[in-house]
Image (cartoon, rainbow, N blue to C red):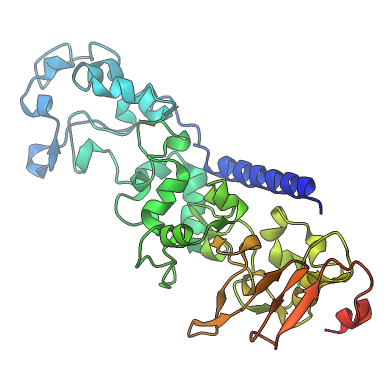
Length: 363
């Protein structure tokens, strides 16, 4: 694949991933007015949160009458009444990305009298959010792998502003910075309790970033709400060092990369990782039992070497680091003391490699 084609393939892949995620993450249309019971809770119930005007008995601040037993109708549209005091919310709801429920009516989410929850919310988050965003509820609750951001701390509000934001999807920061705000520190665990990499440290120390990372779009590969694949991956990707080759297992990689790179035993164009015309990607990966997976040689986020070639890879259940000892040369490169002794390849000679394609098929 030439450079121009490779770049176009990557771009199309990034766009496809972003579009797919955006479709899954797009807010579900909400009703014009959510039918909440806004009847004041009885004083005997000792509601923990009370709206100041209601608590002071000034019903006529919003209603036609000051009589709490017969306050009558409100004197203005709901949001206009709220803005009389909460005037800062006008600017918030004028931002680039606005929550439709808040724009329609504040009482879609808040009780203007009193409530059992902080901020006078009519229901606890995330249940309140997911009562409208049903597609997200399905992903978040039924996915085999869940994102703990939805179940810890402020839940949905860990990432989203419930009123309005300057970033699409009501995100409180740009997506890449938002992800790093949690995944850029030590001690973060995945859904299975396994320690995750400090991504900020990894990216600071490794200048060769994978295309989606360089584009600062984590959602090309990960679903931020939950999914069926480990690490919240949008498509299948082998999680082990060895795997029998099946193109379906590499669906995530093949979103951007040409699947022929591991399907063709002989090539002079698909890859620079070849000895003559013998495709060394095919040789390593395309095996019926113990094919080396992409992670065996490539760091999927960032590395010190081109093509995200790793210095070493975790091997076995203990996480021992197997060093690759890869060295790039003017005509290809070499590996030493890894799965085999030192081996060198020459990709400048486009003639038939010494061992030929027949030998490659036997490996």
